[in-house]
Length: 381
Image (tube, rainbow, N blue to C red):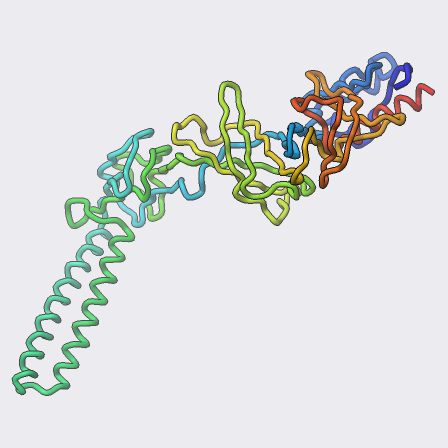
């Protein structure tokens, strides 16, 4: 590195990104106002805020000592397991006459949450009772015809007709019972239905009010089993190609830390963000993680078998004035750090000296920082 002082103007793409964060210089006073918020300084540092780093698309990775290929660190969001959150709704319209659970209460599968009083409930229950009576009568007639046929009193045709009638009555009874079960069951009287909890878990939402008249399919409760939660992560296509199901994800937030496993890497880009959705699941039986919480996720990347030392992505390594460097994250942005590289390991490169393995370095779009310093050198000359 020469002793010249670096001073540069950001490339247009990064200027646009920084302007979105409100850090672009005022064009009316550009000559007097320094570009300290995104300007390289003499020691090869570039000052950027976390918001500017995210807007510029600079991905941070943390190298790992040993055979691993480092980690990808980025923000993520805690989400509930899709199989662990269910809505309890009214299958028929009616008036709510009982609510048995409040917010935060723990329920078991099948516990009654609400009771609805409805004419339709009376019709469903009445149909079940009528079908049960018709089925009993058909069974009695079938036994009678079987006895008469055995005594050679009735012809076989009467026995076949009685058997057919009994089968049809049983089918009608099962159909009526299933219709009642789909709407609810119990309730204590003919015109009432009890709505059970579909899963064991905790009441996280209650939109019903005692005495309220609700329509069919109206949501009354929401039950969540949050013993397992999911992480919603978005990666660039290049980084997603290095992540496989089963990869370890270290989850951190102030005062807490946990471990998750990647369960799904989407083969399709998100239509709006053009990023790859990645899902990881994490044990939450102690209840320390909450749905909607923002956390930091570090995805461990696999390395080449037998590889040792410190490895970083090849896209993190840049060449400036004949020296091999990486850009290390600092509290105020990035600092250019000379390194000595060894043999490549897949899409990684081994760092022989210059890094301890605990740093965060710029990977994707690190060339933007190189271009910043390069333009500063050209203007100084």
